[in-house]
Image (tube, rainbow, N blue to C red; front, top):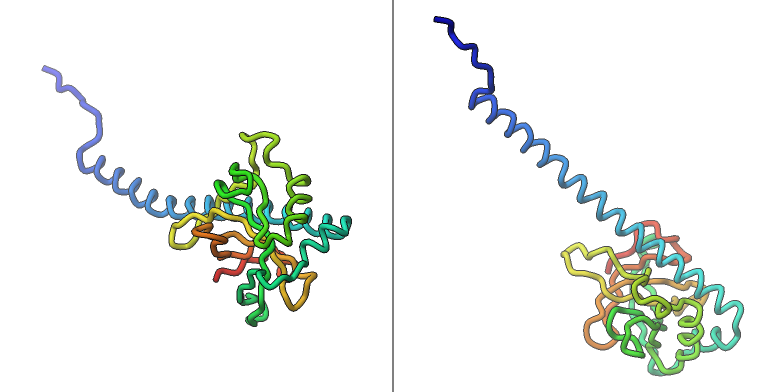
Length: 198
């Protein structure tokens, strides 16, 4: 009687292969998640650059927008921030914000002034960056998350009180009221090198 030659994997061989796959997955998954996080940050920086460019162009072209943007009233919101490059503190004057549910028209797709004196600036900016044309194609959604996992849900535009030419675009938490700018994504100072967390 002939012996059958059975070929196959032993249980030990299967366990070794599964262990190798598990080790490779443990190495690759965090790396891939890091790439996803970097791509989200890059997308937000690109959007911040678009916002910054449009703001600068508009306040250079339209006198009323310029006057409204730099309108320093007593009710202006001024926050103390730290410059990542020089490690020095400066005052950030907030001008406008945009988020997913607290826009002036209730749609969340319009820039809202921090102070009523900046309404003209926001009106011009809303005409230039029209998010309401196509509700399904809002390109300024914030993708990047904070280090603790909470989502940034509001864009901010402001300038340095010491130097009006230093216009900055921030993202942050749109909690109650104005909310809190937490990460500078684009500024004329550091050209969004890494952003500055506060």
